[in-house]
Length: 443
Image 1 (cartoon, rainbow, N blue to C red):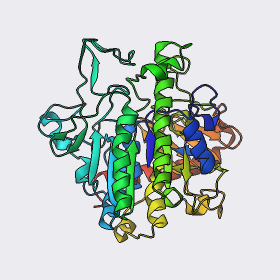
Image 2: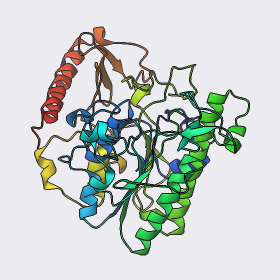
Image 3: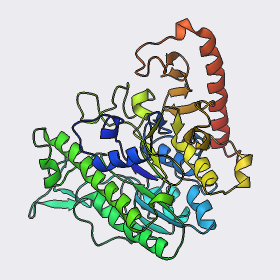
Image 4: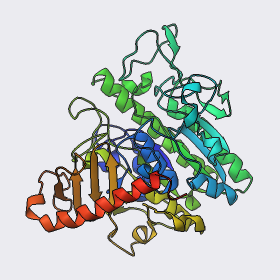
């Protein structure tokens, strides 16, 4: 499971971007299946990550937003299931599903102040970890300029420039921070740990589950000098944003070449996506949501419709595009079906994801079951055609025909009151179900 952080739908070449250089992502998408209606389960970070591992909406788990809650031990997650069945499991990059140290102040919540949210990946099924609690600068991730640093990012520090610790560590186990190979491009630093993990698993003839969650291009975004130079015509923020994405793309290419070199690419299932839409206001920030309305923190399409593809050469023919709603909550049921595992405990609790295999194999052309979303006061229900949205917990309702109007430019609620009533009933029932789960009734 490969994921970028705050990468917009329109920030990649395979979705039409002609400025940001993403040749490796574009090539892998062309060799797999592009998912043009793929959604993050939430318009912000932590909740989406919870959905990736559990198949359940984050509001069922108390992870309502970034830096809220943690991955509960009662949740059944992919890493734990696969590890029990002999898989090597590794988490690399941004965790954001709980704190990683009880002892020292770290990142947003780590240390004694956030001890109730201690939930590191090594206690959630991952045997190999190289993980941060939350964001880091995307170049020289352990440091920042001395003094007050700009929140958007800065020019890459040169030798001798005053600097100080950023305040976040990479952790490899209980109270064990990484101390070596932490300079330069953050995506490369992450991939330097992924590659040997894969090499060890293949050498041991062991199946593997690798979660690679890049920090790029989340703020503070910083590009190395050679990457920033590729976009010298732009302002610093844009140079950093574009350059960091291109640097991440290089590491995606390195990941694919590693799978090829090890002789396992054809039998490895790979998903790529972003955790939500792009940061900042349109026209004021460099990220692109493509033709879609809204950005990060919004339940309009641009906040949750993200760039995505899936590749598995032995099972999925290359070069296809699927325009059926899919969501990060679908990972767990899809992967469990792919590897032939049944988890009886899952049958007794509500699951928001569904297996994508009928869609991926072309046996069905619609999802059928709509996808529910919650964030703050926003609620929405997205189906094959209709999307119901409220910005204020149901005081006002909007309806969009996503087949005819994917940009959500025309609210047709007044023209289809029957559709609004029907979808509202479904959405309200789903919200109530999430609340019951959050109260612990599934455990």
